[in-house]
Image 1 (cartoon, helix red, strand yellow):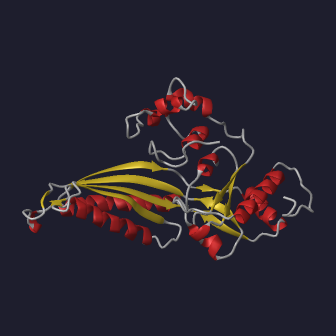
Image 2 (cartoon, rainbow, N blue to C red):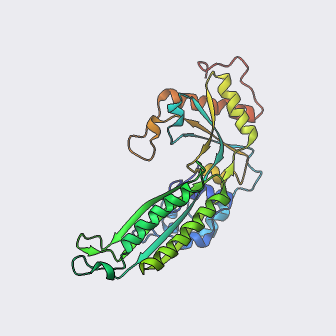
Length: 307
């Protein structure tokens, strides 16, 4: 249904659902190039769902609020809780949203032997200090739903005999509380400026995105829990700390999510795995949930075996 949930080729996540929900602007796409210099418009037209312009694509994709009755997404948990607690189904109550920022530090660099320590303005050390600040500011909230990650840390010239003259950090902060998350982001930006001043380096910052979190619809949560109970499956109400197309579809329709366990909570790696039993359970719960929301019925005697 959607394209590009993951931010890979054009460094923009949930392209399809953003477009459907009206959360994507043409001028954002106008400047998007992949690593080979291919524009988003060229790539979209090459695979058959493009248009004359980015605005034309967005206009044809937009889905008005109210035109979809309900949206329910089935997904692996991408965390370890369901497996650890031997629970069959996660009933998602809220979807955390990330704020992504990029920070560059610039120093003078120099030879690792000839550049004396008191004279250095090491961009790499500035970056390392900021990475630790990301952790500190996140932990300072005292909330387990607040998470911060420095997932990109690149130094240049990246040579053992050179003092780093540039550091680039990609930072991700997520929470189900938008105000709390944004407070952490501001603290990180303040720390970047303070670190740059103390270490005599230049700094630039860019906020890539700052999407609001979403709450899942109460009726959908109830339907998911009832479906699991009808099938004899155990449930846990939980937050989605990864974000999904559901985050943007919640702007169009009442939205909910169903989680199933995955091995070790692993995701985004080659050995990501969900068992056939858990997949079957998830699909069965999804089917009964949609039947309930559509005001249909498969009968109170429907069992897991019949599904």
